[in-house]
Amino acid sequence: PIGFVLSEATVIGIPIAFFSGEAEVLTREEELVIIKDDTHEKAPLILGVLRQIRRLEPFLRRYQRVSVIDFPEAIDKVEKLPYTNGLVIPLAEISMDNDKLSGISRNVTYVPFPGSKVFRIRHGKILTELIKKLLPSGIHPLVIGSHKYTEGLEIPLDPRYIKYHIGVFGATGMGKSRLVKALVDEILEKTEYAVIIFDHTGMDYAEFYPDTTLSSFDVKLDPLAFADWLSAKLRAPTTLASYLETSAPEALESIKREDVQNKSKQITLDSLVGGYEPPKIEEIVYSTFLEELKSVISMLGAKPQTKHSLEIRYKLLVRPEELYRMIYRRHEIQHVVDLAYGYKKIKKPLVIDLSLEETIEAKRAIIAGVLEEIWRRITEERKPVNIVVVVDEAQNYAWRAGLCEELLTRVAREGRKWGFGLIVASQRLAGSVNTDIRGNINTIFFSKLSQTGDLAEIQQFADITGVDQSNLAQLMPREFYVAGLMNPLRKPIAIRVRKVLLPGEEAE
Image (cartoon, rainbow, N blue to C red; front, side):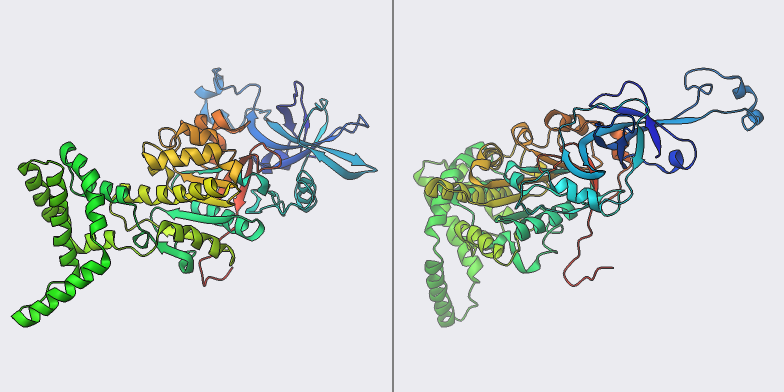
């Protein structure tokens, strides 16, 4: 044993004292312990986690002046009586049958008596099998790592709650993308869900799945999204923006690829006859689209100065190659969703690399388009779609983000009914993720946070009993707390995410 139970234990927290010597020196917060009451035969074992370790001394008190401060040389000669206390957060009751572990319940109702012994759990293989009993039979639990300290202890995650949405929060450099990658691999391997990952930077997930990564430049924008992009690109004032909202989709409809190619052939033929160099097809599209725009806004009653402003802004701010790339994209949104289901068959996610898009409006439009397509299928088919959407750097899409935010909120509220899961990964919570979205997140992974107020935000929608800033400060990269419905123990447990490898890398 490493210690014993003190007075005033409850089902929420059990104060303990450590035995002097090795036990108090080597024990760390987040280690798992068993509390055993030898004096009461029918008492269950209590599985708990150590928190709030405090070094104490009856005379060297924090808020009391002691004479030794006037005699620095005396500090080594003064007799000291240090001792160490801590708090055990109960996680589960373990029942015994003929001195063998027979069952486990996460509903802790027994309060151990003072003097009950506390034992550190060094090896977790048996405990792993015991925790799995909290899951229904036939369930294949997801495993993304092991307990931070206890060797061999895996925390099996319940896949039934994937559709109840997952949040991954932590400061830059803590390994959020590694955790999401491990989680996605487990989801694809052990469940029926397909996965779409929106990679904001193109550096977090695309490198792990190069064969199933799709550039956002290959995904067609809907006409209104194109109008939003053009308006943002032209830095359009209110009046011009209102005209573009109507004229851009109509002009876009008139620029058919076949018509432009035919026009290009005719211009090329004329140039050969005339002896001058023909313009590139991008330049033909560029000039044709401008003429169409001017024609449409004229029909809408735009003033001459508005048309003049449009032409100047267009020529200064939009490049021919850029416009061509925005207009002629390869994949319809329906095909993108079909790709995700196709890649599920080879147990890979579809990664959409958003990094090359110049405007945040275009990135949001692509995410919104995919979400709308999935909701369209739900509306038409009225059956579960079994798909998970991962939104990286969610603070850009889940807060003041217009239609994109609205659709993400709808997924958070209603997706569980249709097997439509959401994973949001973000550096921040407060003022960064819509309250309706985070209020519907039922499993949360969190590490060191970039804002101190974010821990209080987490407490509003998740039970993180006993975790405070001092606990977060002890976490290293790839170490996260997991709490919520997917955690069979429900209360936060510190895990170390397994190392994930790039294609071609070998394990050490």
